[in-house]
Length: 360
Image 1: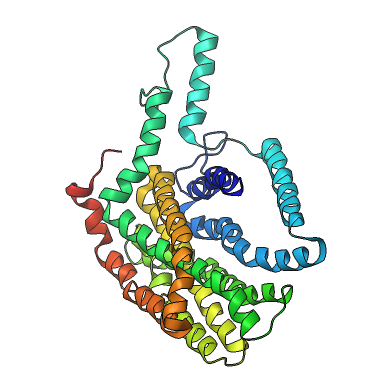
Image 2 (image 1 turned 90 degrees about the vertical axis):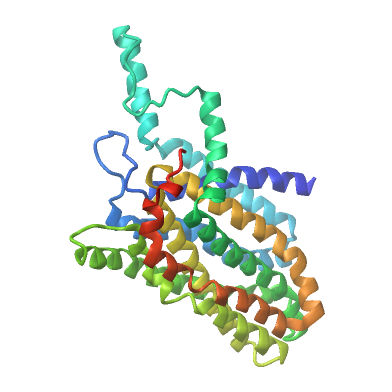
């Protein structure tokens, strides 16, 4: 029953992750349909704020859950989550409004047809699809992007590997710090602070540099704001991921003071949030109208690896140890460090190549 309910939770919780990426796009209109919800040069800051929840949740949750389960029992974790989500659902129903331009214009066209009796009035953005056809295209489009677009495919793979590695680390924290450093059931949740501090640092750095870098590079190219101008923050910080894994793995292997492994997790946390945010923003700016589909493709990829990799993580550590196990993961992330450099140099050519102009 627990597995079945977690399946349903995963089905519904993916909605804010994919829709949230779309809200940062320069192409989303407000309710009036006459203004832009977020301008392109503010999208980096907006997406950073939007991503703080799903990124910091896996850090804050275990800390609160550790003390809550120790004091009141594990069932209270679910009661608190249900209450929090219920409050957010009510607030969403009361205050959230539609912002997607095709839906807004279709609503206006429907009202005009009813008022005038003219059935020929159509939305400018109406593509003539039935709801069934539209649903089918919406399901197929992310998979088509993932399979046929080099940018979406490689970036989704990058973010998925990093995300899966994060959850592999999470599976080791409890037994590493309880067995090697004598943490209790309540205090072991505090070890997630290392990752959380790193994530906060990464978010602060990105919110400060992302939009400024975009504008600075745009000024050198006659004001043209290319999607590739989102990549420099990741280009210069991708090394923090393998560095954090090497530090955490080998210092925990030889039982060096607990603060040093936590420093390694902080480096990894900073690199992980930068990886997630820069790639998401790049996908949004690259695929514009189909940004939600591109973000959905990346979300599905990272969700799959986030579920699968922890299943083999503990066996890997049992076989080769914490040091070599994390070195293996660190080597994989190190091999992926050139990816943002490749797309910064050749991303525009790939986007303009007729071979990759997909019919979505």
